[in-house]
Structures are given as structure tokens and as C-alpha cells.
Length: 525
Image (cartoon, rainbow, N blue to C red):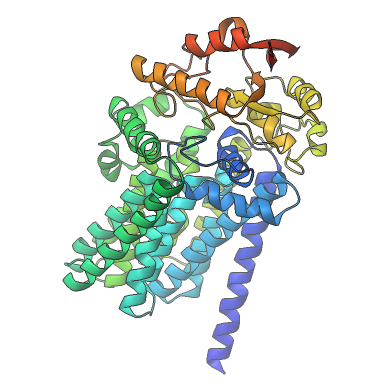
């Protein structure tokens, strides 16, 4: 009878969390979307329309995110619904994984519920929509949960190795640093590697075999040279210039590398509200040392892994701290669990409520909840029912975008789109563009080296020729065709691509123009 009651409480707890995660993520995604979550969206659409990654177009991260999003596009009537379903799925799975990890580790439904509840407001929601960073860390969590579940060692090894491999091919940095956190914490906390020598060799074999399977598929059906160039060469060169190699080690000791002097010299609500997040990590650190006698090996293993993996993975992706607090819910719940003998229920509830309120404030700020402007015309496109707000696309006039969509709607022929702001046009038409990259960033997707950039322009022109591009859309004036590359100064500085510009001027003529958006059509002689 007691077991039945406990089971009912577990099911009820999980169902409530799933409902909350679904509702809050749906609201977040429907309220507006900006360029970044649309990258995987566009990759999925390209997959469905026959384009081959690393042959027809390139990505600086792995292929798994786009492939998975293609699946959601198959399940839903519009791309907007696919974005909502994909985003909700990631948020719900994150909540379930954190809930289960905490339930196993603490054997307490209360703390498992705490962790799941905070995760619902902090994992995918803050990003707004489905994104490969969060997908990758989700697989890292899946690998970790598998390692502590009551399963046979063989099953643990196979599943965790495959999860870590898929995490790498969703976003290579998170996949690698997540695995590093797992191995290091296994050795430090347990005093040994998680698996025995024989089991470690088996794990390595499965992990390597998974990589070979994916890379082998690229070799057989795509261009392996482009895969290595865009997945390793360019990102590593960009990282070395931007000094990201040692950033994770700094963040291990100084969460998110927050500098109080800098923050308070230019105070704003976002900076000040983030201090409770930084404080939580320091309190979690102290809990490990002060409460080590009351924490089991599993408790130590879980909280140290979540702290380390979250900090390292947040550092290497270099995004806004509110968007990459990955295991925040689990870290908070484990910290409260560590001090359970000192805290009353009311104080625990107050702390959980406090962090949820901060999450709601960040969510409102990140997703422009207070901005009621909406371009209703987008509701008649394939982006329905996601709102498209001017505040999410400040560098382009959305009314002009609508006119371009109306102009191109129903017209036959392939299109290419230049500049990130133009991404809405093909998605609204549900017509994947045929330019060779999903977004433009100096050093990350477009080479910063002059010779490499020259080759990149020739490759771009070759793709245009191969795919018989009829329409070419630019969100910047043809007389000064350039990519919107933002530098650290944030001054919108950009660099010109003369070879591509001259090619467009020579082979295309302007057929439509609206407030800085130019549509060119191929000249047939």
C-alpha cells in the first residue's frame, strides 16, 4: 500500500512538472523568436528539401540538431508549430532528466520536484526556442543519468557512450567538455574512473565507433573535407583568436567570470539579478566541503558534475549567462538538500520561489514580453503561430520583409539569401535557400583570413552556379554588399566581400527593393 502511494506521488509530481514545462515553454516560444533558434529550423528544412550538409551548405557545429528538427517538421503542419513542439520537447526532457537524477541521488521526491520546477523556468525557456547547445547538454545529462541508473554495466556503457557521441555531434564543445566533466568527477569523487579498465576500453570502443559511424556517413554521402574544415579548422581558429581555450578553467573557479567592480560600475537590472545565480554556485561549492560528511558518494558525484559541466559548457559557448545555466535547477536542489537539516520547509519554498521569480524576470527581458508589437501578417505564413517581433529583428524592417515574402510567394526558382536578417524570408515561404551557410559570422562560418575568405567567395559563387539560383535576396544595399559582422565594440563594423559583390552585380539585376532589402533576378543572355 505504501509503495502504491509513493508511486502515485511520483507520477503526480512528474506530470505537474511536465505540464509546467510545457506551458511555460509554449508561451516563451510563441511570444517571439530571433535568429539563433532559426538556425536549426532552417537546417531541418534544408534536409527535407534534399540539401546535403557539408556538400550544399555548412555549419560550424554538428549535424544532429538540424536532422532532429527535420523530424519535428514532418510531424507538424507548419514550421512555427514544429519550433514550438521541438522547444517544448527539449524543455520537458530536461525537467524529466533532472527530476530523475535528483530522485536517484537524494531519494527524496521533494528535492527532485524542486530541481525539476526550477529547470522548467531556466533550461530551454530562457533561450526561447530549440537550440543545439541545449540539445547537446541534454544528451550529456542523459549519459550521466544512465551511469547512475540501476542498469547492467553493459547497458550503461553503450547508452552513455552513444549519448556523449551524439552530444558532440550536436555541439562539439559541449559534447567534449561534458564528457571531460564526467571523467574528471568520476576520478576525483570516486577515487577512480567510473568504469573498470576493461569497461573503460569498451566505453571508448563504443564512443569511437559512434563517431566513425557518423563521420563515415558524411564521407560516403557528403564532403568529408568540408566537414573537417567547418567543424574543426574554422571554429578552432576562431576560438584561438578569441581566447576561448582557457575560459572554462577560469569559470571553474569564478562562476561565469563575473567581475563585481565592472558590474556595479555600469549597473543594470540584468547584472544585479544575476548575482543570486553566481552566489548559488559559490554556496554549492561550500556545501560540498562543509557538508561532505552528510553527503554520500552519489550526492558528491551529482552536484560536482552538474556544477563543473554547467560552468564549463556555459563558458565554451560564450552566450548570455541567462541562456546557458543548464543544470541550475539541479544545483539549487542539491544545495538545499545538503542543508536540509538547517532549513525549514518555508525557507526552502521561499528560496525556490525567489529563483523562479528571477527566471520569470529574465524570461520577460530576454523574450520581450513587455513588447506587444506584432506583425500579424506573418500568421499567414509557415511561421504560424509564432509571433515575429520587431524587437527580435532590430536591424531590419519587418514590414519590408513581409513585402518581399509577398513578392516571392508563388514564384518558381531557387533563392539564395545573404545576411542573418534574411532568414525569415525562406522560412515564411517554407522554401529552403541554397546559399552555403545558415548564418554569417566572421571567423566562425566565414573565414577571417583573407586568402581563405577569397576561396570561400569562389565556393559561394560555385554553389550559385550549381543550383541555378534564380533569385538572390540581400538585406543590405547592393552598392555596398557586406555582412553584418558585429565585433566586440558592438559598433556594427563589417567587411566587404568584393568577389561575391561583383559577381552579383554582373549576373543579376535588381527587380524589387523595399527599405534596404534587395531582390535580384538572374540575367539570362
